[in-house]
Length: 418
Image 1: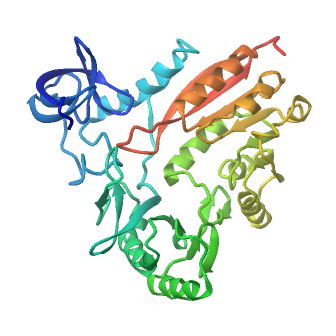
Image 2: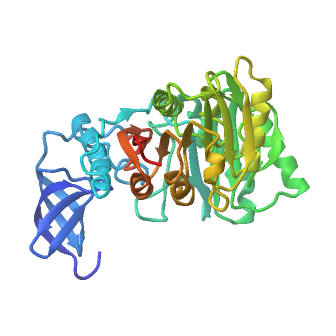
Image 3: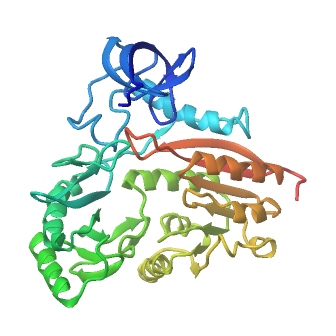
């Protein structure tokens, strides 16, 4: 705390978008992590932020955290919120942001997509005096919090901390900070290490031995496969897909299923669908059970994974896949005319360049899957101006206890609009 830090009593009025309690004071808002609406707290204040010293009047919505590292680890911000408050907080994030461009749009209650837990985790590793240390980042800090277990992870990641520690120890001689991404696949753990740089022959032998000892399905560095002992695959509809090393995957298996269900429900009569920002095909394969699909994705490795899985899958309609950067080369109106529905699942930046062309198209329905409410709102405004109506928005909560919320928005071209 700075020399200006002050100790005072604050009354929490509401929750902020990041989960902090917000107190209104005579000199502005004060953000108080881990405080809840209606609570009176004694806090040490430093400018617009404060730390709770004592909860004087606890909220009826306050519950016990499920993890002993809560408030220290930066991964979770909401383990102290009761179910009703938590769900409404996440819904209001969507309502508030969309209200600026589409006031009155129906925002449904969030769907719980946690399932059995997150199937991917990233551990950070760095050398300290007593050797390599692995863990998660502390909140608003670069300090590491040692983690022996994490209750939000899927059972398949139970041994992920020990795997990360073993691999970090093998790489500790470089003295470089590392990121170890570990994914639970149907064939075992899939690990991609970042930060070390290219692996020479000696290190590759060392890592291959480690993969054998740890019974890893695949081990890679910076997306370069060191050893693949078993293909790490994921079931997507009727397909078994092996993403590229470190490739994108929805955070939970249940989240992927729910997002796909919402997309399919939005396109009940579609015959030809463009799947934009398709990744390795989580929507493409499910859509192809009833319609022709053309998938577009900038990541060549993801497209190759999609094509390999499509060549082996049975009982699907044709899937075409093209490597294409939709930020630089969006589909134009004459290309979009070939489809009676479009699915969008862009990264956090959204899909502004593509949406501008969609807005002027005649595509009857667009199912937009978003991991960022702000970029979705910006793109939604463009579609609305182009004659689309935002039919409904469904928040999807894959990242339980975090401030992150995803959603599916369904847009339909209004009658008579081109």
